[in-house]
Image (cartoon, rainbow, N blue to C red; front, side):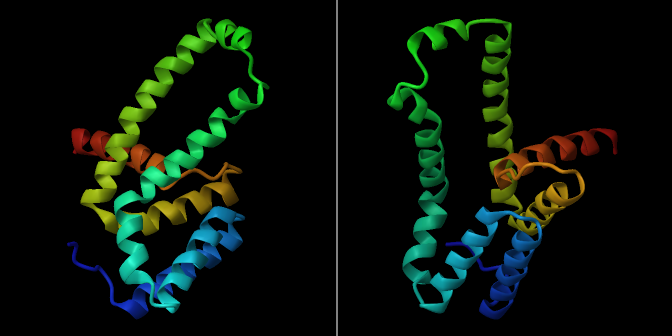
Length: 158
């Protein structure tokens, strides 16, 4: 069992700040996630829901993402001929990038598990990227993966 970093009131304030960051940064997913967690806390479902989300939330999210990605195959919008034609330079680069991304995401997930205090900064950073760099929202695992790379580079030079 993990030790909570904040008391209940402080964690609710942080969720409200994240809610407004999501509104300000046009990140609907952050807004919805913050609202859901605030409702879970408000209706005292945190003893049931939060342990489930801590244990299986990433798997549930990845399952939904995989369903979205595979839907064109199920609907017939992506044919086997198109899949065969993806064996090209671009396709091989995508294959390599996919393998590397999973490695980096694993490093990011390990970083978030060992240093959960960075999650707020990761989220705020993605909102800043949306607002000031005209970026697209990304998940905290990908942001943590980039952080892990930066941290390894920083540690190497310092």
